[in-house]
Image 1 (cartoon, rainbow, N blue to C red):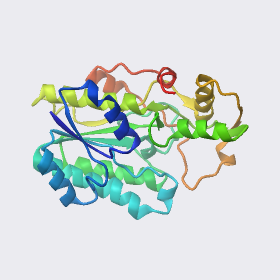
Image 2 (tube, rainbow, N blue to C red; image 1 turned 180 degrees about the vertical axis):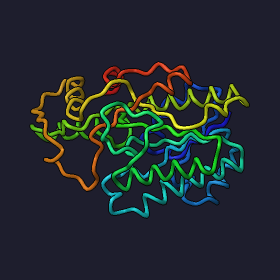
Image 3 (cartoon, helix red, strand yellow; image 1 turned 135 degrees about the vertical axis):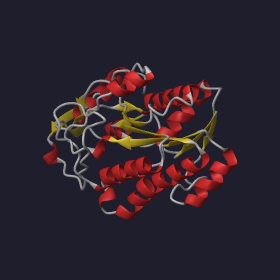
Image 4 (cartoon, helix red, strand yellow; image 1 turned 90 degrees about the horizontal axis):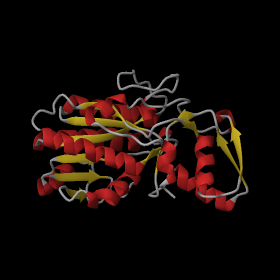
Length: 286
């Protein structure tokens, strides 16, 4: 089984590389943007022709939420055009696409965990381009999985956990918002989930068409960014003055969802997944 991974240098791409040795039955091909430019269909066709993947995990994305507000064309090129190019080439080569999306497709006005059937309503450019990318895939390719996730962190690349640890080494006091509720997701757990999905899909061929579609994945539980930061410092035995603040005290160009907890019932049922709680996963990531 050949699995092509885009965005190899990003957080999720590095997490997949980190665990890839646990799956000797899979021939992973990791491509950074210099190896595979998903915004150019010819680049996608050349790489797919060379490696002939059964699956493509699209871990490439424009994720600068605030910058996206002033960089629509760049965000659209990567998150929409890139996703569509991969879907078209997967269709041409009979490959299955696993595409990673986001809780930002929702407006955050819910009071209960979002299911895959809830109607998206993004409030910013980033969320809108990720939703448009989802739609482009759905309109192009039947053999697809769209996995919406949230608050991804790990020991790799840039993320909230690493930012908190860096800031704690520079300051005595930190202010973190406490009125945005969601679920931290360990990138390694997300990587494991994606591989679990493609292995089951590969083993069940050709009876997997009823599994294709949208799925939610995050760790279990929920917290605020303040709770998340507090637990990060607790686990790392860091003493710091951590002050909870409302989002209104920390204005950003892009509006964040006030509530973005995801319901994981569908993925747990379809793929028999046992999902770790966010605190348990964080404990293993220092």
